[in-house]
Every structure is written in C-alpha cells, then in structure tokens.
Length: 237
Ligand code: BTN
Image (tube, rainbow, N blue to C red; front, side, top):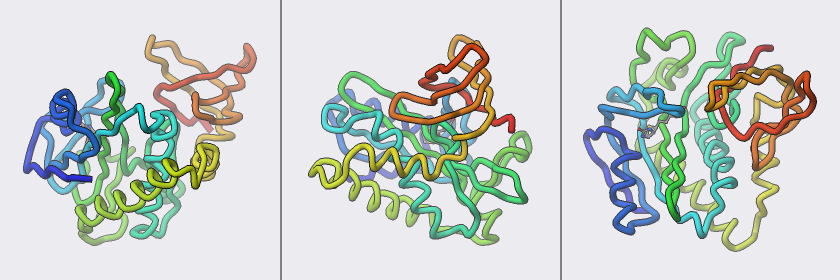
C-alpha cells in the first residue's frame, strides 16, 4: 500500500477521507503528530510526537468491514508480540491492551469509519510518546514497557506486511472469515468477563460476555441474552 507521510495534520482519518472522496483507495496516511486526533465516540486521542498515528482506506465492496474490524487488532497484536514480552490482548471491540503488574493498560486504539463504499481505519499506538498525566492510570507506551525507543515506521511496515498478507489470503479464499473470528477470540480479554457497556444512546447494559462474533458481543443480562453491536466496554471483574 502506498504510504503518504506527513509531519503533522489534524487527524489522519479526516485527511484520508478527503483523498478517498476523490476516489483514492488502498493507501495509508501516516502523521508524526496530530493536532486533533480523534478517538471512538467523539473522544480525543492524544497524539504527541513519538506515537504511531495512521489511517488506511480500503474498498468495502472488496473487503467485509465486519471481518476487517476483527482482523486489524489481530495484526497489531501479532506485530507487537515481537517487541513486548508481556501478555497482549484485545478489549472489546478493538482496544489493544497489555498486562502490567496484573493490570491491563491501553497501548493502542482503532477508529473505523464506514462511508459510502469505503472504510477508513485509523490506528493509534503509543510507541515513544509521553503518556499525558490525565491518562497515566489507563494507558502506557511501548517505550515505558521496554525501556527503549522503538522505530515506529518499522512497526507500521511490519503491520502492513502481516495485514496485506491476510487480505491476500481472504481474497484468494485461502482463509475464511471464521478463522479470523477464531483468532480474535483467542486474543480477546473480554470473553467471560462481567462488563458494563455504554451505548450510543447513553444507556448502560450490564452482564457477562458469553461470546463475540461478527455482529458484536453476546451478553447474558438479568433480562436474558442480548446482542450488543458496539459501545464503550468496561470490565467489572
Ligand atoms: C480509540 O481507542 O478511541 C480509537 C483511537 C484511534 C486513534 C487513531 S490515531 C490515527 C487515526 N486518526 C485519528 O484521528 N484517530 C485515529
């Protein structure tokens, strides 16, 4: 995939969207810092120098967004495994977490936007950036974990190698969607947990996660089994 490397931008997702509107597909926008980095559900994504911030644009007529949404965190974990000797996992739907001192902290996040016939997949990974005080309790960087600076462009190129290899195999039907789901579930740290999920209408549902599939979590609540497509997930125990 072609990589467009900018020194700074408001948000790589927004910039990628502008190019996608003109018909461009299969490319990556990489920025050294973002001045208005966006997280899921309208939250901010602190994007200070040193972190890895990029967005990819794919044709959603060729690739199923529901499968891509599961595949992207798998590929991030497969790359980061080579840099970190701690347990890595995916918190529903797609937070990249690392276990330090018996606590999971967030290493990276993914913001997918589905527009017309394309999807913009924005990925932020805390590599060498300093974690701001406001989020120190819940977030961590690779540098903090390993004690050394890590080449973020090398992480991106390793990620693209693995991701494009999976895309090729999906296209050629060498692997099927269910193998991707199986891998996702292997890395999931949410299955089996008691959770609270904040929905887009500000409602909160509480229950135990029995399973995850292409359409979200299967939650056992007091009212019975519910299917929750997405939301902000908090692990209770
Ligand atoms: C989240 O966990 O809330 C998702 C964070 C996604 C951040 C990335 S950084 C690159 C891309 N551009 C953005 O503005 N956001 C995504």
